[in-house]
Length: 431
Ligand SMILES: [Zn+2]
Ligand SMILES: [Zn+2]
Image 1: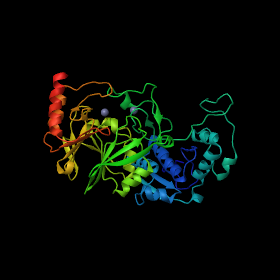
Image 2: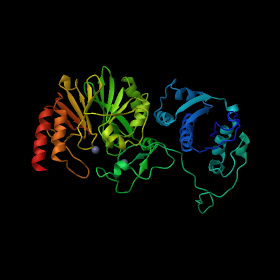
Image 3: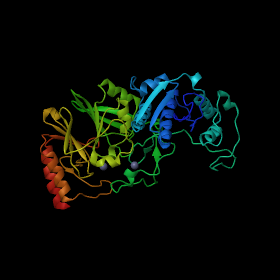
Image 4: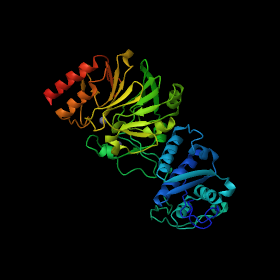
């Protein structure tokens, strides 16, 4: 229930609401429902033009988590928490407080209505019948036509299936903010560097990926470097890499699928101090990953800021040619594939000889002594001479020997700088 704080008697829990939300969510935990309610209410409050909000919740747990006093551990809830925090940052002021269910009768009645009579709940939400004012309203179902006219032949109204979801694009694996229905299109796939799947734009969710049997696997690549991949692969199928440093672990690039096992394993390894991502094709579920690790910073070059679809509280849009994010971990803006395309320099990698993690800003090709550079990999569009030369110029000041690019096994084990220089010359001859 949303009550206008400026109306007389607004502090009365029975004050007349200016909007009500009631959704069936399928089979979910209480906590999931509470967090979903927070997100939907904040979105509605923002749409109504509120500048400040006070959340009155009958869940003490959610209040404590909102205020940052207790942590959110479960990844799905962490995503909702991140989205709520991002929405709250858009208000001039906010507060959250706990109120027992006995004093939150209107909200309780709406929750019961959504469970017992989803059609009536939807009408109440649409303002086509008054919201219930006591817990008994759920026992008073009404048989009304669907206001949108989408009744099927049986006369039953088709309801949205499982409520709002953080939809994930099937083709590129990028996650979007929570919404009842999937976005119309994925701008990252619409871009000429990617493509819309041949069957048209399709969406999935974390829960569906889990139900389809996907799982994450962590494996050591070399001392201090771990590969994080999903089996079977999802979308583009890139891996993430985990760099371990005395100052904390960094996730380089990101993947769409998050599961409790890999999160728990990473927590045992010390968690994540930061996430850094080479370019938009590898954003994956970065906001969920960040949220699972206390909203850790997600570094993306500001030149690609327009491509970020799901902004979480951890997002850091960095500017300039290079940025040291932790001691010995430096992000370098190479440009090329995207204006903000980035590689990560790990000074201590390869037994101290230095390692570059390159995403597909620099891609290790099948003959792994060589690399290449493209504007579009799937559509085979090359880069201009100047852009290719700029990539080599950007990484030349850094000392490194080994390079890891975006797919498992794509590693130039040694002589990385020579591979880059040779590959640039070969590219320019043939382009
Ligand atoms: Zn996409
Ligand atoms: Zn790419």
